[in-house]
Length: 134
Image (cartoon, rainbow, N blue to C red):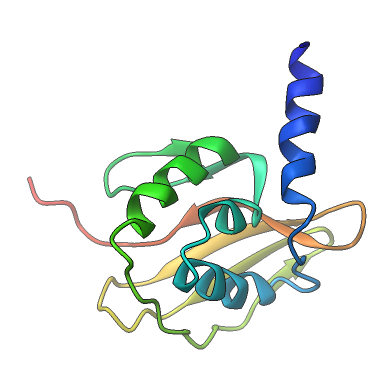
């Protein structure tokens, strides 16, 4: 199957998930889907070429890699609490969302892009701003 068809096939799998209609919806949907153990649902919040700075000190690149990462993380059944968002910065079809985390990780920030249908997806995700030991 040509690469473009594989990408579309992968995208179709994620179409069943509810969409973020505003940038701030993504954090709420992330918490709901993570607490439900739904790695595919978490991955559906990201663009196909998204980059996540996680695990600490590394990058996870692409929606499928993010899905695989969250399958591992969610296998341990962690529980996530909603975090109140800081003001969202929006410039046209690009926005930056952030939250002050309850777990002392320092901060969380994401860059999200408006999609052609008006929904929003994460393209860059920095879930923790902590100094690395070493």
